[in-house]
Image 1: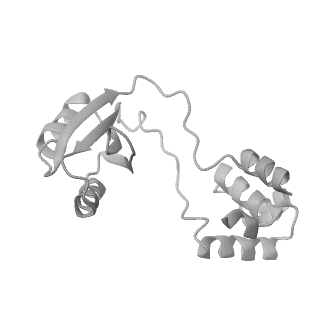
Image 2 (image 1 turned 180 degrees about the vertical axis):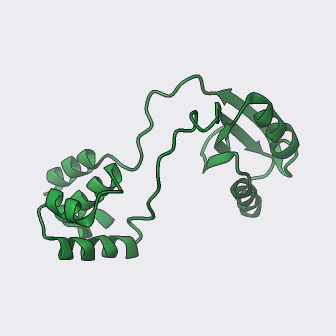
Length: 166
């Protein structure tokens, strides 16, 4: 398990950056209780190890005119690896698809889609998604409102688990 290689300071750095990726290195160092130079070295090491994959701004989709959010459950005709990979590649090319997850069970994939309006999503659905080779079925659910949208992982759960293992 990767977390066994991380000490409490590394985990605190990850937790703090997950909550606020814009803070300065000096502020981060202060929050985790070390000086700035070793903090920066640790952050760079976490980036190089792939534990920090990037930094981004969380934008307000509705304020930017993306009023529609839809989850699309996609069933494929074939689950051969080449077909799964081809579908994933296709999803990466569609701007309206913001997330694509392969699932185990009745549905092969779930897609999180955003669109400025229902007609734009419907055009994507009928012109792109439903006409994609190997797509057997698509069921959609329109999001009425979101109750929770937390990025990353719950570090408090990780810390509690590590404390039980110690």
